[in-house]
Image 1 (spheres, rainbow, N blue to C red):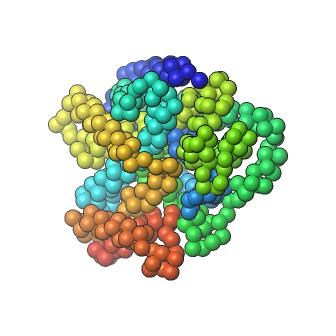
Image 2 (spheres, one colour):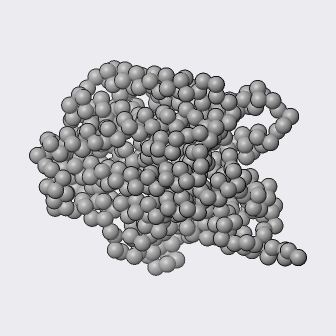
Image 3 (cartoon, rainbow, N blue to C red):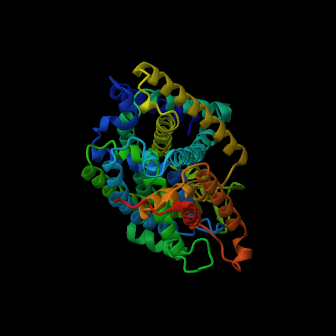
Length: 503
């Protein structure tokens, strides 16, 4: 397939996004950028959130895990254990967190920490979000940019750093003015293309293998790909760990994440926002199952086309394509030209929602939470806009630096990296919000709060690293987030006191 032709489709797709951005950002202001003037349609938000939640990691990495038996966490359909946990966690967001955010009329969800505890807790929560989302978003971006680089732009002698710069400039251009107001529409468009790419690839491969859904599941079962539940308590992939961990990851990475929640609180009212979350949670389960089905079909397909599979390696022409390389290799080197084009459009549709929303949310959080932009009555709208655009540009530069770091490190399955990092960076956020919601105690707000959060992160790292030695072979996996949050909770408890009695 011609690299130049694929590149033209990438450019054409971007121009379409730019057109949507121009149309939706007309007469936009700071409120449009931060919360979409609280006028977003809940159905558009729900549908667009699918693309943001899945991202390029799900599109590329999840199918590759199905036949990759070299890892500790996911084998076969075992990732679906985490998806079950997500489903539970989204209900907690809908009926615990969203009512809280709407009752307090929040623009930044971390303002809750300021109202509940004070200045230092508020700043700490915001900083941990900024760190968490920057790392997570750039890891996702790296994965998709690397696919575009390896399969398209290397043949055109374009260096990786230039690919990264071009992609980030594309994202910067269509989010610069409209913010959330624009992203609600662009994410809807991109989710549509991503799901079309997924479904077309599944249907084509099933037809090529002469399988219907029933016979496909039977063939995958015979290969050992359809197993979901891991019943080994000592394993990182033990089903209770995965389900409970998945629930807390959904709560932390969606419910305590400004990027995801600023779209929800841009909806007109709480009831519609809850409908958005429940609809989204149901669809996300179905879509993740289809991605796992696709993964199994890809392994069957490549086995019929000269692949040598051992469970830990999938060799094709001397190259190991197991994990993140599997789907791009099949789509761009084996499937017909039309399917390859659909894959590329689906891939970049998975790239942009996870990046544009992150860039906008990080700008919003830094401007509102760190600079106090909404509270500065001495700044006029023109000055606020200038500061917002400067911050937006600075985060774009930071994204570029982080992506280059991931490129230098490299990894075969980026989804493992993201889930591991989430356990460290989102744990303190989970502990802060849990203490605020579940306890009525008052903490002594001060430098002790960020110190406790950092100590919790450090202890969590040591526990994770040495758990097999300390606990007789037991490996800490996805439950690291819960442990980190609990350590933060206990630390806050140690500096708290009972609320003063009201006479």
